[in-house]
Image (cartoon, rainbow, N blue to C red):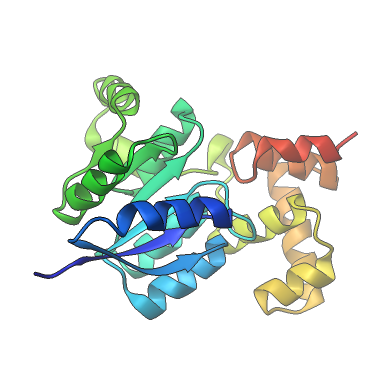
Length: 229
């Protein structure tokens, strides 16, 4: 029997271990890798080519939504199953627009997680009931084509590239330009140019404003607000 290969992308080790423990009891599912950051999830997908990636939204260095966008672009056959502690309607719409195969709350049962993995591997979608209801109500007012064109981080005509989203997240997480450059493998000047371009495009002219924008767009978690005054 061919087992479904799964990559677990979750920044909290104890949560990853819990998911792995749950899935180890499933004879048809094999966890082939674990990622602690969104960037690592993209890298491990490239290396391991899992059938399914179980992706947390709130990931450091590269959030789960942007990691999903990059994986979907480079590996369209890999199914992405999003997990989150919150079932915000805005997240549900963004996940659907990115082409993720499903969205579950972290409080889900082991049976639901394993079943979701099996369903998305078959080419089906799998959403928690409340999320599925929201999607149905949204789609009833929009054509599938218009819904599919929607992108996260693109409000008010501000189209951010994947690299701009990465830079924005690292800045909003409080990392100085030198560290951002090291994380992305680019020069300090390149990071500064991206930062200035972001500020001009978004009409935001300070780091605190960029951080608030990142929070509002779901690029980073809202607990970053604690660092702002």
